[in-house]
Image 1 (cartoon, protein in one colour):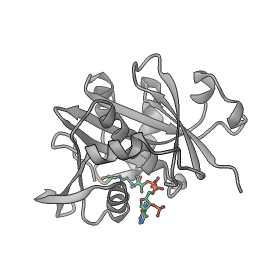
Image 2 (cartoon, rainbow, N blue to C red):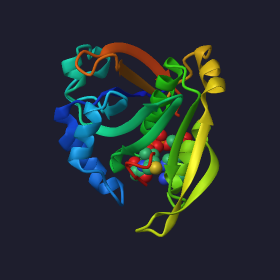
Image 3 (cartoon, rainbow, N blue to C red):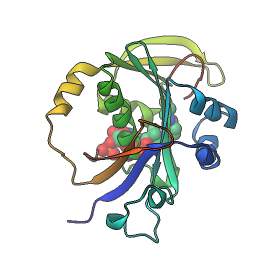
Image 4 (cartoon, rainbow, N blue to C red):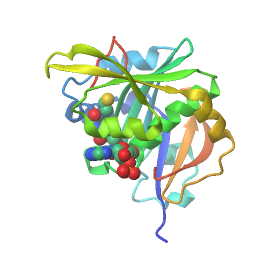
Length: 215
Ligand SMILES: CC(C)(COP(=O)(O)OP(=O)(O)OC[C@H]1O[C@@H](n2cnc3c(N)ncnc32)[C@H](O)[C@@H]1OP(=O)(O)O)[C@@H](O)C(=O)NCCC(=O)NCCS
């Protein structure tokens, strides 16, 4: 069996903004600005996580220090908010040359896991009907369409599909699940603090909001 791919997920820090913007500009029809990301880093209820590929000069299994983990290129990110009993997914993108490697799903599941950790009831997001990749990703995680906002994406003349996922069944199922993945190892540095992340290892299967519109 081939070795699983290894990616690191950690809270975004200020010095990550340029690399995140490189992905953001080419990923969305209405990209966020640099300032948007900086504002997110300052909001207490906002989480921005970045996924990094391991530095090709390092042997992934031997990487142990946060500095070594931070030396790889950023290949994706997710931004979500804690709002009352909801997790609101605002933005997720993966670098095009890393698509279909499970990174988008890993980031999304990390956000859901964060919702489980704080006993959130539901995860919500908005997506364009024509964004098939994103819709499939969300559906595969367990999101279902619950409504539409007409003419939400004015530039594209498209409504927003509102999607929702009840977290309780997901959290219960995953609490007792054995590490299922043979395909990818995600090393998640938990967001207890944006400055001093804790380290937690989780294995995953191969597997928005009004104020910040995304597609
Ligand atoms: C949507 C996006 C984040 C997916 O990231 P990714 O890392 O390529 O996704 P994953 O590899 O984790 O794929 C997970 C699942 O999503 C679905 N999926 C992903 N890309 C897909 C595509 N191009 N077509 C159909 N389904 C797709 C599949 O069900 C896939 O599972 P599978 O590979 O086992 O079949 C990525 O395409 C992206 O960055 N798009 C541009 C930004 C964007 O649209 N963000 C969402 C805004 S709402």
